[in-house]
Image 1 (cartoon, helix red, strand yellow):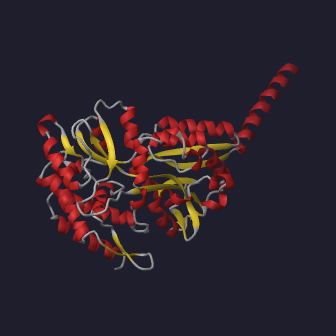
Image 2 (cartoon, rainbow, N blue to C red):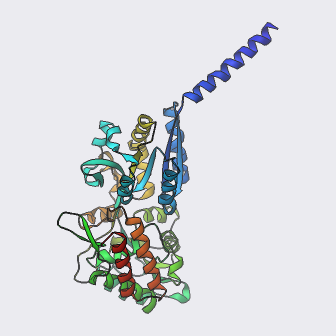
Image 3 (spheres, helix red, strand yellow):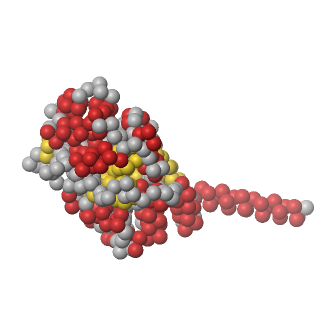
Length: 410
């Protein structure tokens, strides 16, 4: 009888001990975006390793495709259940500030971490206050089949000449990849617009954004050229409105495209999947007589005001930004490092990274305005209408500019 009571007592102690331990754990949730090249195992291993290092914290990484990330985050916020931390496109930051749901992340960063971030990449700093800690930052590249063309085209006019020579639809080989399905980013359009010395808005003397300029000479010229590639020269893959960037990437990796513009992550994917053809990278082309300019994309991580575990979230940031985890992350996503401590790592001294870095001075980012997600959709809708020949390129861009100015009260 005594032995039985002793056994029951031991079991109760163990159960109660486990219950107390579980109750003592603080839960930290992170809305995590799925980058191309970033394997699912990375997030799982990061979560496991962090919990082993911090058994008092229960980490929940919520993996989400980029294309669904913005809407999912807004749904969480609208439902009164924002995550503690979220990876965002830096361009979303003003929208979140307007909603008054994020707070300065700099108040919760360790001195070692903040001092290890490259200041040039802190686009999440608004009014001198850092709300978004950079997660990834990089320009975009031209990928091309170096076994089919002797050199990379410097201009879009040169690219068209080469495309006309190598395009071979009978062999299911298409010269130029062109995305035409609405996506969370306007990357394809930005490559041609920026390469024509254009931008989405006029910049006012006080640094704010004026009227939409996608229908100026540069904007209409860029859209006309894109449309001509699709509908006049027919050197793109057929049915462009069915393709997003990731699907174009699959076509290029399979050897079915001659030219494709993307980020450094495509190089990672080419290596991971063992591409069987010769390829190379070059700066994004530009139009004749116009300056070269690439799109630079920055993503940030933000901290939400309603979080009850900010100190624990800070511990996760210290862990994630440590060299071993950041090095693996940067390798997989194909972006240059955002931390100073990895800048000289041998992995980043390759031709791909050199081209990414050399384009930074003349590059342009997305407009930092709260209405940008809606503007993005409006421009996309009109691009699709042009590709489907429902509107001329000029009409499409005029309609887009008029609607955008209207929603912004201009």
